[in-house]
Figure 1 (spheres, one colour):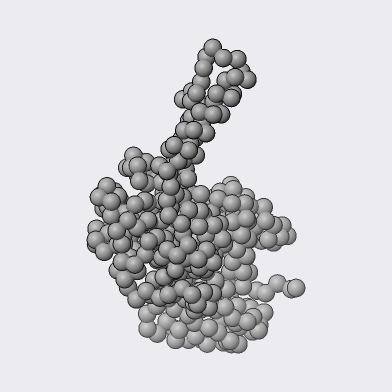
Figure 2: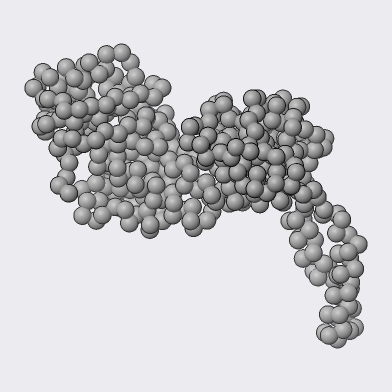
Length: 409
């Protein structure tokens, strides 16, 4: 029986993937095998040593102490692409509200009645209504130019980061008649296959910024990308460009951004990450973190997270981990050994030697590495005894060891 502790409300569609006959799923478990989380902050949480994996129902994982987990052999999963369509749709909406002051115009129109436009206290209700209607129409016609802005068609969009969301946003912008450029030095093969041929490749970020009327950020946050939009970027950006950020607030250096908005270097900044300084800036449009806030996205992410977690717990397979390599092996034997270790020389040799010393035959195996860590799936034709597990745990460099027995179908 596997035990899954939920740290947030998780979509029932995801939880339905855990059969009650094999899983106990609840928010109050004290010795869980895995954690299933959305936005709960785990940095200050106590994570029991029983936890083998953490699955984040979403793409971002800055609420999870990944280095801490890696050092303990805890595999951290995310769900890239699960909320991609939801974020992409909001990105397209942001292009529109960055172009014309739709939000400001709607707020202004709503305030016309509140401000008593054409209101005559002495008139009866029918007369009041007619006076107001005429006054409102006249005022709108006289002042609507305050909220006008350019069309998207024919303008250039620069998409920075061509992951699942970036590719979809770029393709839809092409369909809107925009000229689209993309910049991503680490684009995956899958993303490249899905990207429209009409999207031009930018060799450098500076080259994209110099040509784009609109720039949309779709990068993960890392040491390399934090503050990527700074004074240096704003010094080369096309004058009057509009910047959209639905990825992470920290990608933009806030003080440099506000200076660029005040100078007119940028016409507008639309973000899903409000701060007090941005809320006080007239040229910043702040959205209340709505990127993945659709029922479809919540369902998709929950299903992906639960599926990846179940696959890992039952077979040891890893897919969409942010700290360990992708790893999968056909289960050609009833028993299997899973070993997480540091990516240092002679680890595989020590593992196989420890098994050979106890006459445990390896049927098939795979070893994959990623940065400082490696992961092994080893199929054996006999149960791996506790003596072998203890011997492996004592090997310097081995972080976590687990034995599995394939359940009957």
